[in-house]
Image (cartoon, rainbow, N blue to C red; front, side):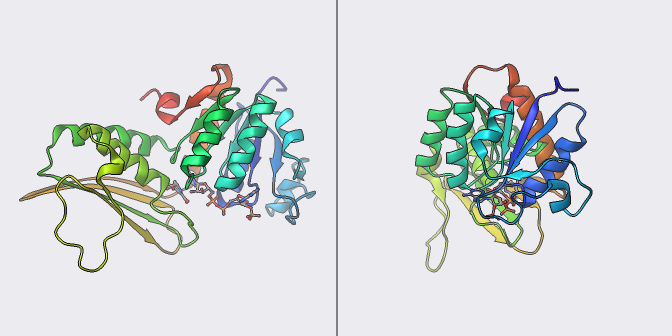
Length: 269
Ligand SMILES: NC(=O)C1=CN([C@@H]2O[C@H](COP(=O)(O)OP(=O)(O)OC[C@H]3O[C@@H](n4cnc5c(N)ncnc54)[C@H](OP(=O)(O)O)[C@@H]3O)[C@@H](O)[C@H]2O)C=CC1
Ligand SMILES: O=C(O)C1=N[C@H](C(=O)O)C[C@H](O)C1
C-alpha cells in the first residue's frame, strides 16, 4: 500500500481540483498525500473530505506547497498560469513529476515551465482526455489529406466561468491542423472577426469561443469546402475524463527522464 506513488493535488477547491481529489482517493494505484490551496483560503487547515462536503479522509489542506511536494512522487496541477509557474519551480526542486492541465499559459510561462523541466518530468496538455488526444491526431491527418479548398474553423464551447479563450484544446486542434498543412499556426490563425472583415482569407484557421451555463467542454473542427463539409467533434460530459487522464500521466511519468511530455506520449498515440 505505502509503495503506491504519492500524489499531491493543487487548487483543491476548484472544479478540477475536487474531481482530481476524488479520482486519486478512489484509485487503487496511487495515494493522495497532499492537497494544496492558496494562503488565506478558508479550506486551508480543514480535512479535505469535510471541506468537500463528505466524510473526513484524515488529510488536511495546506498552503505549504514545498513541504507537500517534498513528500510526493507527483503533483497534479489544474489551477491558473501564475500558480502553475510557481508550482513548476517547486516541483522541480522536489523532483516530483508535474502534471499540468492549466490553460491560458503565455510564452513567458511556457519558458519558465521548460526551465523547470530540465530538472523534473513535466507532462502538460490543454486536454487530458483520451478522446481529444485522438481527435488531435485525426485533425492532423485530415488536414494533411485536404488542400486549402477546405476552410478550417475550430469551434469550442465551455461553461460561463472559463477565463481563457480560445481554450487550450482549441489551440491544440488548431496546431494539429496547421501541422497537417505544414504551415505556421501564428501565420494563419484568425481569432477575431467583427464588423467589415472582408472575405475569408484562403488558408486561414479560424477560432470561435462559446461561453455559457455548465458546458463541460465541446470542440468541433470544421473542414468546409464548396459542396461538402467534414466535422470532427468531441464532447466531454464529465470532468472525470480529464482527471483520469491526469492520474494516468502522473503514474506514467514515474520512470521517465526529466523533460517535457504530453498526453500523446502518455497514451502512445
Ligand atoms: N487540461 C485539461 O484536461 C483541463 C484543463 N482545465 C484547466 O484547468 C484550470 C482550472 O480549471 P477549473 O478547475 O475549472 O478552475 P477553478 O477556477 O474551478 O479552479 C482553479 C483553482 O486554482 C486555484 N488557484 C488559482 N490561482 C491560484 C494561485 N495563484 N495560487 C494557488 N491556487 C490558485 C483556485 O483557488 P481560488 O479559488 O482561491 O482562486 C482554484 O482552487 C483552467 O486553466 C482550465 O482551463 C480544466 C479542465 C480540463
Ligand atoms: O476550463 C475548462 O473547463 C476546460 N479547459 C480545457 C481547455 O481549455 O481546453 C479543457 C476542457 O475543455 C475543459
